[in-house]
Image (cartoon, rainbow, N blue to C red; front, side):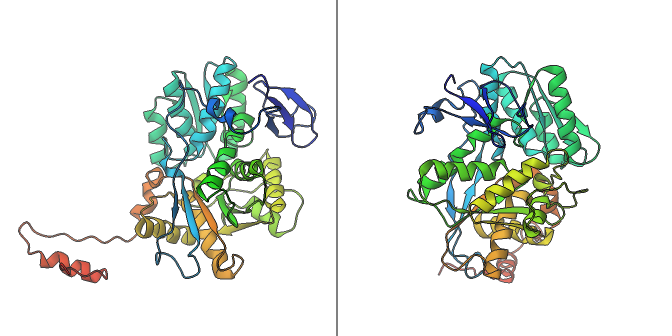
Length: 396
């Protein structure tokens, strides 16, 4: 840890490695500078044995042939639902908490739309420290139940996510607890996401795909993917940052060719994990926008119906049960494949960021294959239902 320092991405100011959340000189985003540390030896100590729940090294699965629209044959899913609490947020929180404990923190605070809060609550329970989790009051009930199950203090905040974000800042200041909110606020958490890029590079045979599609709120996962591939040298993949049409501040700036991102109004989308209006921390969105442009990528918005279709394609077509935010990456990839922005033969990785158990309510609204039979009913009733689904019975 002694080799680390913090550097402002805006003005270049440097600081010793402490619990610091923004640049004193300009208020900019801080990132970890590992100095003389080279290779990946540092990764072994990124999460301590007292904190880890077995996060990371999630599988990379190629789309099942015939499960998607034609032209989507070179498509993979990085299945982050396999992380301990069900989302990629475990990567950030575990690393941020490990560092904070080394600095003497006695508890944690996290503003969340659900997934980061569940992760923070889980890792706090593992470490044996108190957790205060602040979520918008409209957060899916499944996510709030998970947070509460881990024993955290669950605080339901009126309004959108940015209100929870502002209150978490105040609580962290009042209590001295580490703030592990998974915007760019905690540089140690963001730094851990470079391992996503490292894993993808290894899983693709020490090479980069043409595109990595990333569900995007404020954008730390975009940073992690870009930084991870940059660590490996060579070509960077193009980043496709995905937002929902009902909350798309970064997409709006990209489409307007704007230099900076401005805050969104009230979010209106089923994808709670990316319903972040960026009110009060617009510079996070601007930094992400710059990263997207640096890779030659794009920012695109998808509709809720496109997300629902992608959820079905992942679950029924590929066996991956994803929440709406997690499926938004596939929705965006299919949209750009259809438009021709993603060319035939290009290799595409979709980040599936959160598990379907996070939001059962959306799945309950979808049509399903279901019948009821009386006890002792002939098996033909089942085979007829199978035939109606396009499957044949028999032993041939």
